[in-house]
Amino acid sequence: MAFKIGQRVTGQITGIQPYGAFVSLGGHRQGLIHISECHCGYVKDIHDYLKVNEEVEVVILDIDEFTGKISLSLRCLEHLDTSVEVLDHQHRHYWTNHRINIGFKPIGDRLTGWKTEALRQLDEQETS
Image (cartoon, rainbow, N blue to C red; front, side):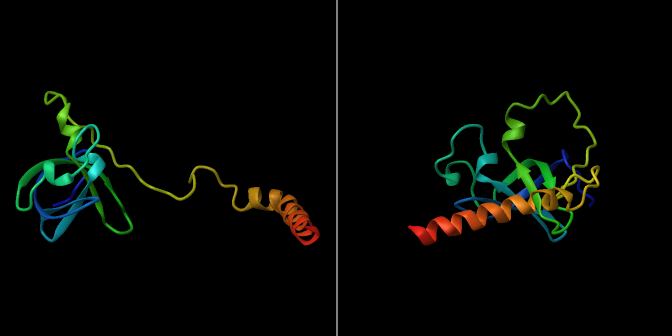
């Protein structure tokens, strides 16, 4: 099954850790519901909301293209209007803005200042 961001899927809780719950999505695919995504508001103990082997309906928040990790949410469904269809949207993560091609220029522009500041701090430490 090809997963998409915003898609509603059903899965089974396979494990719970203090930081979140692992959900089997079938076909050897697994996602994680982070503790902050299991309920709107503060969650003291995730066990108050989820149990191992429980079947849950979740929304796919994100899919990491490099690792294939799937981030899931229960709280998105708490206030979701069921009459509204989820848009077909794919969010891509990049370490930099792929629309701007500036390379290492900003680092080069600041390098001299950084060196000067580092040398000044070393001089202050030696005189202290």
